[in-house]
Image (cartoon, rainbow, N blue to C red; front, side, top):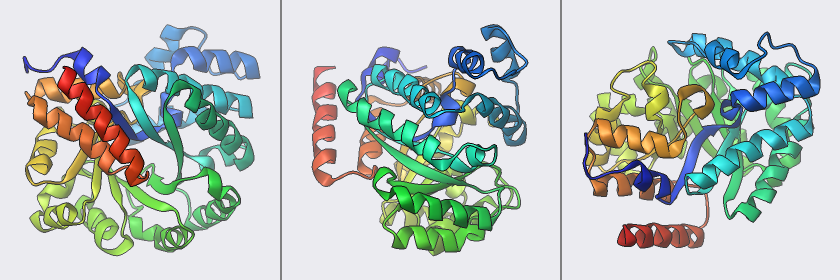
Length: 338
């Protein structure tokens, strides 16, 4: 265990969060509150019962718990409350800038309008300024939905271009390669959206999917994606092109005991812009500071390595160079004082 890094240090470290699903921040307390507010029977009546329902050991079993939980999200106020609950926790972890994933198809497919989702979330990002945190939104396609569904969702998103920073891709990767959504990504890029996509760890055809994302679709970041270390040529490509990789140790630990820490270290060594994030913190037992601390202690990271992870998060964020410079100065000042 590292003697250099403390939990207080990782929590207080200025950082950007680039890989967090807002639906994955639904804590048991809020889930119960919203279920009661909206008269939704979730089959649980206590916080402990909700926690016990969070049982899974792979992506498919996780999604089987994750999507039904969203039924409590019904109104614009619900989405606002969900986002604000996360943002208050992010402030405690000294997240200075966050780019939040949301899954409109998961809500539209159960009768909730795109407008309801985006208006609630966006209002929270505006109110986040009062908390001194910069918050933006990334709309993700669900890869286990059809390409037509993705096309329709993108068309809907164009009505809210001023509220959405970028487009991503998540959910079950099996038999849903990135190229399934090539046309949607191409159109999104042409409309001015930034591009990212999940390449979940240890998936079938993982390297081929990462290759599609980097060499064909041309994403700016890859979410998870640490399997890239299996192909030195792709690692060199990622380093040369300053592609960001967003690793999430605590969620990784549910399917990989080593939480992909060795791969993170390898990417750092090769100069790849890898950074640390929380993914679905309500489900995987920790927010971003906890994720930093988990990988730092398990792999005995040096102080400089932890600082580089935080620096990479700002450098691969989708904000202006001027904003990045301000946040990087905050980071340097924090390090100097600690």
